Amino acid sequence: MQALMMDFPLTTHAILEYGNRVFPHKEIVTKLPDGSWHRYRYADLYQRVKKLSYALVHQLEVHPGDRVATFAWNHYQHVELYYGIPGAGAVCHTLNIRLSTEQIIFIVNHAEAKIIFIDATLVPLFEKIAPYTTGVKQYVLLNSPENFTTNLPNCILYEHLLQVDASEYQWYPSNENDACGLCYTSGTTGNPKGALYSHRSTYLHALALLMPNAACLSARDRVLLIVPQFHVMAWGFPYVCLLAGSDMILPSLHLQPEALIQILEQENITIANGVPTIWLGVYEAMKKNPPKQKLALREYVVGGSALPPSLIDAFEKDFGIKGVHAWGMTETSPIGTASRLQTMHNQLSETDQLKIRAKQGIELPGVEIRAITEEGKIAPRDGVTAGEFEIRGAWIIKSYYKYHDNHLSFTEDGWFKTGDVGTIDAEGYMNISDRSKDLIKSGGEWISSVALEIALMAHPEVKEACVIAIPDEKWVERPLACIVYRGDAVVSKEAFNAFLGDHFAAYQLPDRYIALKEIPKTSVGKLNKKELRRMYSNGEL
Image (cartoon, rainbow, N blue to C red; front, side):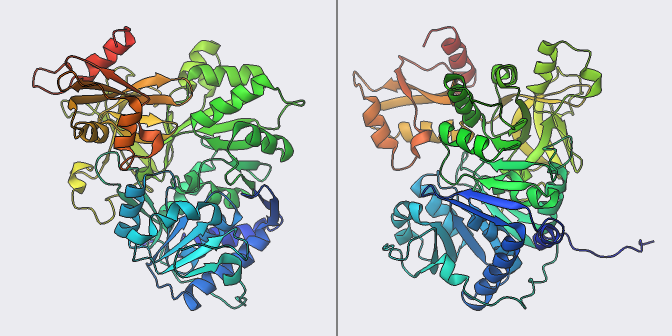
């Protein structure tokens, strides 16, 4: 028997319609790349998104399902693109500006993006890429002066595009299962892979994220979106804020600790998001130059890599600001878990409470997580038995976009293999202890040790190379390269970085190169990274 309920599609333009109806007075504030400020209301956002969708369809001839890319900082126009592109029936394809040239070229061509909206400050970066992405037919310049010059072909200004009458425009009638967003992984194991999100998955992800056990947002909040809009759709916050009625504040390229602190003070921010590296920098800057008045900031939501317990503790004790640990991936939209204390933890000591808060947390409604042991069994939730985490749910991908080896990442019964390893305790708190694929996470960005090893061993003076993650106070982890040379050769750090520079972004390059006579091997002849990590910890490297 079927239920007698209305069929109300869960779409991104339904989110926009809600924000416009219920919270039209709420603000979107941007510190633009040139340092000036822009302010307008959700009602203004609504009208401009209508114009954008109209222009995409009637001026740029965008068709349903077309991939329309963004290469931009966090600002109000980028939020407009989040809603305007799907409002025209197309797919908002965010490009990570921090990837290598080689990776960006692959992603643009693989996604077959036909239009790219690009910040003027980022045009010089893309001018090197454009000759290799000939499928792009149009560039739209954001935050650009009228007299801006570039060798990018077929450029128009964003504000010129919006000079249309769209009062009668109707959103493209998307099915809630139609695609609305496309994000690519960082290419840590081979080429980057695309996660294609639906309207429904985006809507449900946003609902889960605003819950008290997650980001806990409401109409009383002013939210600073530090997480880049090219990182898994800014963790979904541009959608969450409209549903919660929260004011949205965007820093564009002003991500230095002092600039962020100024925004926190000036805009009375109550909640912000960002990777641990951001908050480490903010904390250190505040310690050196404490704010004259207590910040309104009550919490910061952290993901991307593990938040050191020492930073959670210090931030709260010194400034009364709580850190909320969360976990997710590009493939999970991204939120999967969040770590908040429950009433049963009130009786615990501060030390024991901190241990819980430093875990990745409990799964949110809409997803399920399990750990699978090396023997292929589901690990008991005892906080001791480790396994690789697998996840399924309403906003988890079921396959990669245009990818033929999905069986490597998905189980026969439909779970996604995360590659993260750890435990789940009796209270349901997930704790990541390792990564099955020897990935390195530096400042919230993934780095592939295997890709670095392969590239290094292509150097004529290198016999063997092994790359491991080592702890770093600022970036959490950094790559350390262990090299076995051919003969008596010695290669400088600068020469190695120059050799790798065409294939890796600057942040992916090792900080140190150590010469070894031999690299330890396992019983089956594989590079023994566990032994290298032990040697490093004992000061033997």
